Amino acid sequence: MQNRRKNERLIGAMGKHFPRTHAVAAGAASFALALVLFISPPEVEAKRTALPVTLSHAEVSTAESTRAPETETAETTSVMEGLRVVQETVRNGDTLSDLFQRAGVSSSEMYQLLSSGKEAKQLAKLVPGEELTFQIDGEGSLQTLELHRDRLSKVEFSRDNSDEYKYALHTREAERYTAFRQAEINSSLFVDGTKAGLSNNLIMEMADIFGSDIDFALDIRKGDKFSVVFDEEFIDGEKIGNGAIQAVSFTNQGKTFSAVRYIDRNGDVNYYTPDGKSMRKAFIRTPVDIGRISSHFNPRRLHPIFKTRRPHNGTDYAAPRGTPVYSAGDGRVVKAGYTKANGNYVFIQHGERYITRYLHLHKRHVKRGQRVKQRQVIGTVGATGYATGPHLHYEFLVDGRHRNPATIVRKLPKAKAVASSEMDRFLAQTQPLLAQLQRFEQPALAQNNEEKDSVN
Ligand SMILES: [Zn+2]
Image 1: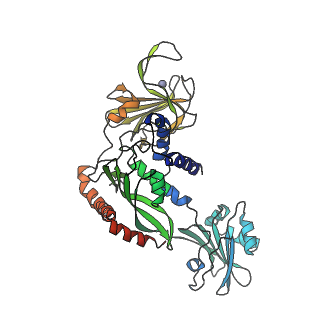
Image 2: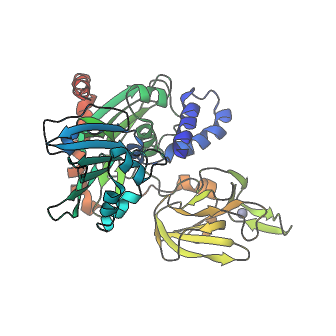
Image 3: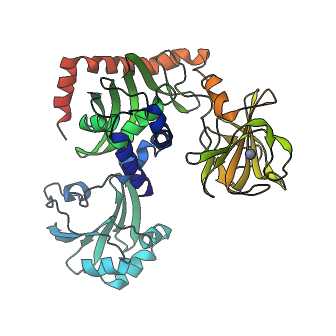
């Protein structure tokens, strides 16, 4: 929920206008951009999507002919092969007893079911919105209870011949279809993206992919355009969410950037240019999303506590205590501990040449020797050690020398390209996706696709 509110605020901010003057827009915009680039992955959206509360009985029962009417209410009842079928939706504050009572099943049957095995314990942890389907015989005895946690899984307890409940878990996979959307930007990325049928998460995912080439807060112009191929997930012909972006191109001020998704041999997923270069920088610009620079890198600074000339070897970001601190790049934690001066600190080695240091942390979330990914949370902002208030002191070392963290990242290379030994595999996986993107981009074909899409 927190995220959603953040998204909406962001969309409000981003949706308004093209920047009139860069100077004025820059502060707010770069803050907004930080949010744009790093909000929840698409899976989260699929989970958040409001799902209709009722499953059709045809799907969950053995009788093909019975199909309950679709309804938004908590309960439906129907009769099937002499069994009464009652469907209950878990409401806020419901206990299992409440649900059994509403279904007309005795509490002694409920206790029998609950004591039937460890799997039955999950019935004690229901979440509002989940569904229970009771099949009850003529004597009011529970024959089958199904718990629908979500559209993709169903837990079933059924009474067998010896009057015991048997447990079974049924899972399904969503069907995936390729979808294509394209748009030209007339008012803003969000307005035109939404008009073209992209979800907010997909728009942000796209901004994230191109984030190191295009500044979405400042660079976007009227006439820019994009096209994107992504997966849509369906259950029983109904859309339940979006999968990942597979291939995408963005034309910004006349220059076209393309990116394609690739799952490498280790199972890592990243976006690359069509010739296998990484879309992302080896290091993110700032290790915190919120906060402002409160003290710059300055080799000849007067220290605020000691009042002596001491070099300030890093950049300070003032941010509220508890603000997540990210690893600036992939790497390994070489030190993590506490000293009187540094407070809680984490040092990370990135490849042979680079080290980043994070000081005065409130909490440390990583241990020495641990591998970390770019943007992994390694701790939180605090004021431990010699600190006048909550801030992150951030250092960047190249070949053992302190460099200005605020400017060095722009000068560094991008993240690793696809290894030449893996290039054949990369091309085999990604060229069909790019071909698909190009095929869709031709207007006549794009139109056909839209007709096909109207199925949902
Ligand atoms: Zn500092």
